[in-house]
Image (tube, rainbow, N blue to C red; front, top):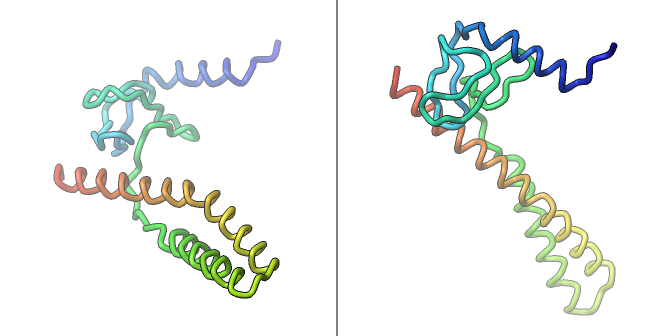
Length: 137
């Protein structure tokens, strides 16, 4: 009999429910130190469920150097500026190729904007959790 992926995950979670976290692992929502709590449980501070099982790591935060997404945001801003310039130049004498390039850059910028915003939010959340952790130490 072959177990499905969900059954294997559930069994692995059940095995780790009795084991306690020995190192410093922090809640991904509030930054609470989860040391001495079970690997699969919920944060006593905010109530968010987490799974600190190795290779899963859902809902937890491991302190590391958080790098700002400067290159991603800068690239997005350059694409948006280039799209604006191409659109402006496309109508001064009418030029279909500049209009097409401006349209493609605008579409690219619209698609990439949520990704850049998500990266900025993730960076700011990581910085806030790191500050909260440093205040507790």
